[in-house]
Image (cartoon, rainbow, N blue to C red; front, side, top):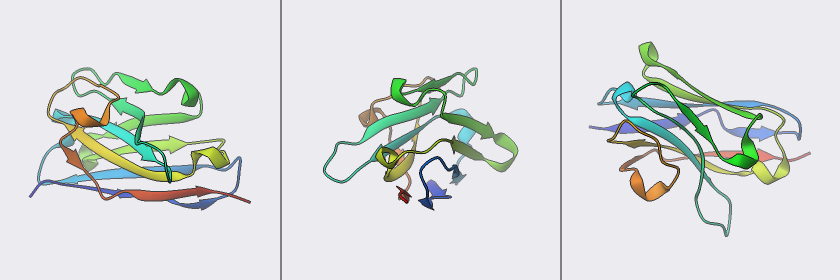
Length: 124
């Protein structure tokens, strides 16, 4: 059974950091492009970051460059999203998703496998 499981969310103060994990089971993540998306209440799901499987290229939403970093640990079959200098507007449910193509896109409808999401709340 193909599964993606996110973890690492929580409550953090503005300016703080969190590292989200996306663990795969039932399939090998390094054969897929993996994306991180987020959805805040009342808003559409938006692309945050993506890492390709072909050459490890990384992509970020323009507004997040410099604060978020995506990475893979193939030995652990896990993709991470390091989030620094968090702001209240980063509050959302964060999802990881797998695309059965090696290259990245930042639109959610191109991804066929999704995790259940992890809540990130940035508040003082």
